[in-house]
Every structure is written in C-alpha cells, then in structure tokens.
Amino acid sequence: MQDELSRRLKAKRASSTAGLGAAFVAAASPKLLPGEGRLALVLPATVCTGPSWNQTRALIEQDFILDMVIASHDPERWNFSESTSLSEVLLIATRRSEEKRQTNHRIVHVNLWQNPSGVLDAHRLANAITAVEPAPLEKHGSALLEVDGHHVGELISIPEEVYAGRKWFGVQFARADTLRVALRLLIEGEVWIPGETTTTTIPLCQLDQLGKVGPDRRDVWDGFERTGTVTAYPMVENHDTEQRKRMVTEPDKYLAPLVEPRAGRHLRQAAQLWQQAGRLLVAERLWLETTRVVAMHSSTPVLSNVWWPIKTDNEAYDKAIAVWLNCSLGLLTILAQRTTTRGGWVAMKKADLKELPILDLRLLTEDQLKSMSNLFDEMAESEFERLPAMAVCPARQALDDGIANVLGLPDLGKLRHLIASEPVVSNRRL
Image 1 (cartoon, helix red, strand yellow):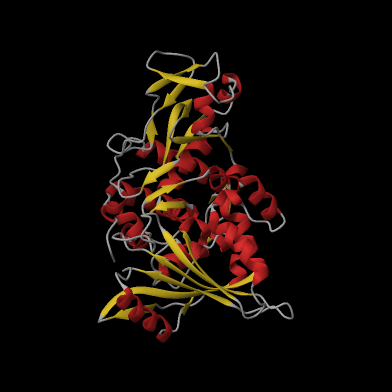
Image 2 (cartoon, rainbow, N blue to C red; image 1 turned 90 degrees about the vertical axis):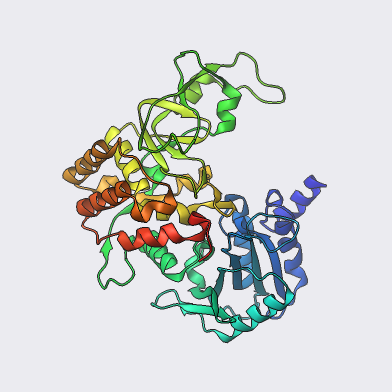
C-alpha cells in the first residue's frame, strides 16, 4: 500500500513519508472547485517547517491560497487532536482559481497563548478571531485576541510572497514582535529591536557555506560502537544540561570501529565517517526549557551521537560560530529554523542545519573575526543559565554585549527577554 501511495503521490509532488495528512492534501486538490473549494486540516506543526513536508508545502502553495494558520503556543496543550500530545496546527486554504492569481494575498497567523478547552470556548475564540484585524508583519503593533477579558493570542498577517520557497515561519513564535525580529534578520539580514528606530544590517550566509555538517547518529551507529577505552576516535556522548553549561567541551567517550554490520544495517566505513569529524558541535535535539548552550567547541575533532559535528578547517571560524549561535541572535535563528515535535522538544534536522542562516564570517574584517575568536576564549569557561533565565544570565549578557560591540549592534537586552519568555522556551503560558 505504501508503494502504491508513493506512486500516486509522486505526480502530485507530495511525500507519503510525511504521513497521511500529506497524502490527503494531494488527493483532495483535484476534487475541490477552483476558487471555491476549501480545505481545513489539523496536522503536525512540522507541516510548516519540517524538511519532510517540503513537497506538501510546495503543493499547497501551488494549488491553494493559504488563508489562515492557527497554532497553539499553550504549554498546557500544544495539540488540537485528542489522540496526540504532539504540537499541531490548523490549516485553512482555498483552491486557487485557474483564471487569475491573487498578487496581494496575505496569510493570517493566529498564534494562541491559551488553547480553548471545549466547544463553547472554541466558539467564543472564533468570534474573537473574526472581530480582530490582523497586524501586518511590515508594521508595528499587536492585534490581541481577547476572550472574557483575557488576552489569549495574537493575529498577524504575512504577505504570501514572503513564504515562496521558504518555511512558514509564522508558527514559530507566539508574539508578533519576536516574529518580526526573526524575519527581518533571516530575510533582510537586518537587526531590529522593538522600540528602536534605527537598524543595523549584517551579512548572513548558510552554515554549509562555511563548513560541512558531519554524520548523524545512525551513520555513527552503523560504523562504530561506543567504548570507555581510549581509541583513535574520540566522541562527545551526551547533552546532559547539568554538564553542558559552557561553550568549551572535551571528549568523554571513544568509538571503536565495527567489523561486521549490525543486524539489518549496512556497515559504514569508520575512516570515511572520521573524515567528517569536527571541533565545532551543534545540538541535534533540544529540550529548550533546560538547554544552556546550543553549540560547543572541542580542542580536538570529535564525532557525537547527540551533536552535529561541523568541519570548517578553520579554528577561528569554529570559535566564532559557537559564539554566534549561543548569542541571542543566533538562538533566534535556531528557533526560527527548528523542527518542533512537542512544544519545547525540538530537533535541528541536517537539512535545516545546512541552510541555517549564520553570520558570514568571510565578510568580516580580520580584526572582527579575531575579536569573535577572542570573545570565545574569554568566555569559554563561563557557565550559562538555562534558556528561560537567559534574560538575567550574566554570561549571556556578556556574550551579547561582546557580539554587539564587534558588529556595531544595538543593545540586545529586549531580545533576550522576548526569547526567554516565549512559551516554547519557558514552558509557561504568556
């Protein structure tokens, strides 16, 4: 059945591996009347950002007008369905008319801070949504949803062309201003802080333009077994946040090459895997509520089962990237690029990491790059608080201040507060 489904969906450019929701979108498209037929689907939140849903997003953009996306940012219930606890969204879309295409369409994002608990609450919320004019992404201000005297969410509208070939970033943040900061940075390379009238532009590039992302945990598992005995292949084993408090790390285990493949698996050659070892490590999976650092630097090349090794062959780049990703702007890009599983339990997929926008170190002056590397050395042993406390973390503030000084940026204090209080980070309601 899976093979037949894949065959039928191939012509529709939808992926059967993304689940039945993707299959339904492809199957429903030709059945709906152009300009009239509407689609309303509750799907995993990964439909908006996950690499495996790329084809489904492209199909929706081609065949439908995406009218509204409703996402729950309520830590007490990230989902809408009763059968799951995973993060979900509700998509509402209209079949595109074949005669004409809208050129000024705007997608409305409803980001809920409190998920309605029953039919009556949902009905009152729906009335509130229809009564509020969404705040445009390009402007300032908030369009707050109010039910029974309480603010339960926000509406923001985004021009359809912003999403062309991109993730649907509007679901990634609970508040309009945080989303505005993120999108202005990701799309324009512009650093804007709410309340400020001036902005600064910085050069960005994809991570894979500066370094090569190494093997994932399955590849490492197919080529090695873990051991406490010293070998030629050191590794960093875990992401215990009580241990991973600093930007510097050292190997804590070793790897021994396999002689025979594991049952049902293909043997990976240890030498080939080891050529992808790196000194820079970026977290593969994160509990945002407990995470302290998202990138670390090792004095020696390593592989890992829970961190992505990045090979740059330039130690100054390794240190500068670690500094960038752990500052507030770097954390913002990771939150925007993340694949959400359940609230604050998120993944950084290899495809996403390769495309992660980071500071383009090639366009910095020699003095700026040296200052970034020196900033790492100065703060390598500093201990960082968990992300929900980043607004009052002395180490994070010092890191932000150092980055701002090197790049000529405004004070990042407001951004620290915005990120720290995002429900996906704090695991608390707004």
